[in-house]
Length: 296
Image 1 (cartoon, rainbow, N blue to C red):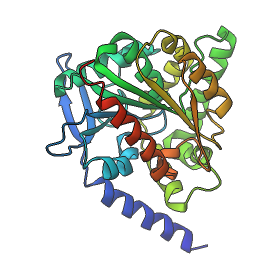
Image 2: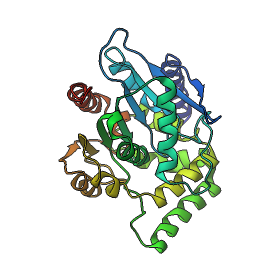
Image 3: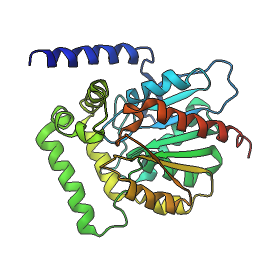
Image 4: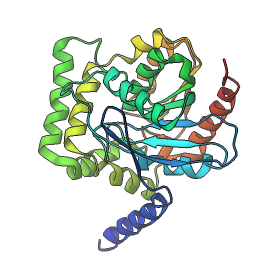
């Protein structure tokens, strides 16, 4: 039994050493709010930047394997969403996707990114979809991994119940308790111990207020409605063993987006963490196709 904490400690030390190669940066926007983020820039690359938006129980550090694999060929950036890391929360207690998309626009403006490939995972897909609808000319390609659809189209009773259950869990467990009890759901039975430690590490670092706002966002959002209005190129992928945003649920998102769903074998909800080679290949292929959309 005593070996388990040692294994976890070793995994965390390894992760922190890898994360340290892509240190947190912070930028202040014209609206007097801060956004923290991590970045790697493929020097001399003519490729479009890749912008990564994490899910509700995660942060910018979760994308380190994608930094390592894709950073040599293009600029790759991952933000801490408003209310996560050192990023200023959005103003509304019960925000809409547009509140986060507005901050995303301001952040990209501040970094001089006029056009990019935009990738959203889970809750990040909701923000990515809202941004793509309102700023389509800035998105050469929209890639959604295990997208959360939101409950905005459901009845008020369903929306309130889903929201209140998650808020109650947060209040009862706190971030560390959430990480211990919920992180297993993010992965398939095929995930390595390192991947499990990685997901726990990220989830334990969420900030309660930011997580609560994101819970309201999830209750308020309707990703399918946004995607039905988006005319740009889009791909949707999900792990075959995802029990949070199931392949069946993601199929409905793909139908709304008028695209074919890609299902990744032996992967759960946080597939890009547990199956990095498969997911990075999907991302790289999509980015290379989107590079041709640079000026269109």
